Length: 349
Image 1 (cartoon, rainbow, N blue to C red):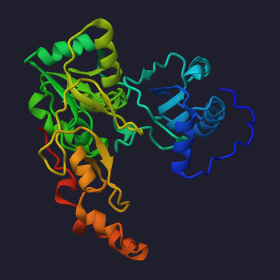
Image 2: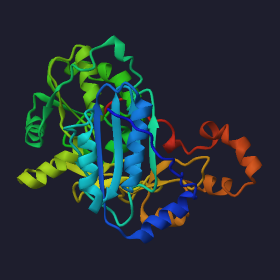
Image 3: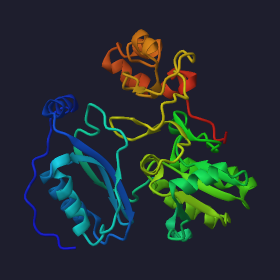
């Protein structure tokens, strides 16, 4: 990889709301995509600089993590610049042949409002020591058709490798759904939760495939011999189902980590409003109280009733003086956060 001197790029310091308004006013079609690759990067910072310079030039927006183990990207690009982006990425020896997951559903607003590329120790926070097992010994891929066959096979086990708030709004038929808040937690408990299925065929799935890549190697290291994972995750599954006319066995929406928060994979709404527990809803909101900022599902009636907060308590607290809120923030999760939004228990359902 040749890294030449790059010009100074002026950082956009405008408030987030102003950036959002500017992108909305632009009314330029954008293509949302994601991609990842586990590949050895000798100089992640130099690679980051190279990426940022070109992606900024192409007016890309998104969140990208670079580490010595590879790259994990969620982003969008003006649709008329997509071919130029593809040509650039595929010209890099480290990324040649990398497939993209193109968004299933675009919204009437941008999935991202700024370009952020960060150098991290890992491209996914998994809590594992990669020196203790063979991270390249991953499970074989499953196509959408093969995934459907696993779902229909009573001798196979399908496991959701996402967080509880993701599987709540969308999941495959009969999948095991570990009730965890982070991927790190899931990897820590997965071998124990799945030990009764150790000798069965296991299929893993996640949003775009990156978590399952690591999870399959981790389970194989822990004695699970027949582990496979859905290639391209739920995003590619949805495309294959549509293109090949396959039965869609995914119910609900696919949670995504950008401004859209979800892509609709089926017309079903399988979750309920967290505030009333009565009306169905798979629309996520962040509580307007920044001390809380919890992610919750809200129906139209409740979001109007609580004015965008997750509870009356948060609405009242948000009106307190800033100095008081700073003090209360230290104790918020322990004493003030509504019970239904506290940490999920570590169990499978």
